[in-house]
Length: 130
Image (cartoon, rainbow, N blue to C red; front, side, top):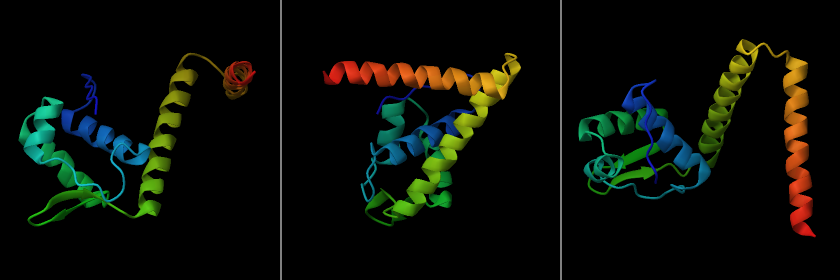
């Protein structure tokens, strides 16, 4: 997994978000055993305590669970994963809409821009199919 951090949020919160994205996108499939805290921390380039804090929060949310001697695993509850996916999407949409509003766009203009952008993608996909 490619770990990327910015200065606009605490590292543990960014870890939570990135691991959630990994879970909902299938990078970490349901039931998969996660690397140890130390190994994940090394991979991400963060302090193990920071990684532990993020994983504890994900465990509290039910997206991962611990088995005493076997480590941490991704939940197998697909409905919970889908709920997390929807919540992430809604938050990203909200941030996007807030940014567009700050730029001075009205709702109708945003919808029109999205339709144009998606229409362009559909044309590109059609061109690839030919």
